[in-house]
Image (cartoon, rainbow, N blue to C red; front, side, top):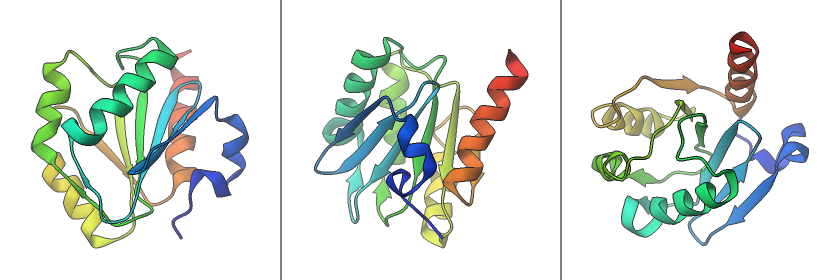
Length: 141
């Protein structure tokens, strides 16, 4: 079952939370988790640019050491080509993870892979994704 970060034990580890009309974003020590609202057509100009600006202002990072987790608890669409705008602005990600259990979420991810140059990791639960981040960081240190 898909659950929001707010409904997990991980919520107590959130360093900063941004609540937009189109999404909720949770900043952790080593990752950022987004939960886009139902029926949003998520794009760079109207949505992602604002999130990136706020995340950079808190973390001081342009993404090189951040893992981004898209926790797709709602049904929405992604303007996949807008990943090109993200990279054109010299932003980057250490890793990109998608948490989804439904068919449309998996289809969105397949389309995003056409425009996202790195591997997109897929998980069935937010717990799996956050455990992956924790395990990966333990291996690096």
